[in-house]
Length: 123
Image (cartoon, helix red, strand yellow):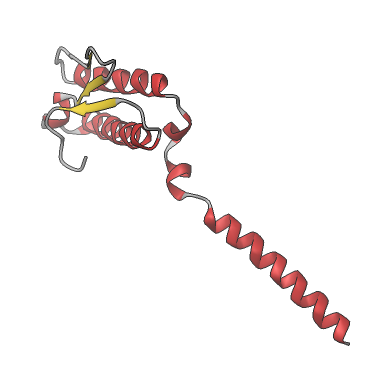
């Protein structure tokens, strides 16, 4: 009888340990695909998102610049301040979330990327 109790306790402990490990997974990592990107890839992704956002509303984009120290500056798209509705508004909302995720990944990756300009609401 005591052996059954010990086996049950060990099995319960192992199962609890596995569920604790599963719960310890960083939920931000699961939601932010950019956390696996290199700094160079983040610059490219941010530039593309910024240009796409401005192009959606017909604005000429100055998405990036680089200073003498090698730090890249990504400018928040002016398009995020445009009033719109329908499909364009949905696209801009997705692009804004992409930019936020890219910025978070660049901070965690300690990349020398500066996000500059007026920040849109919610960013």
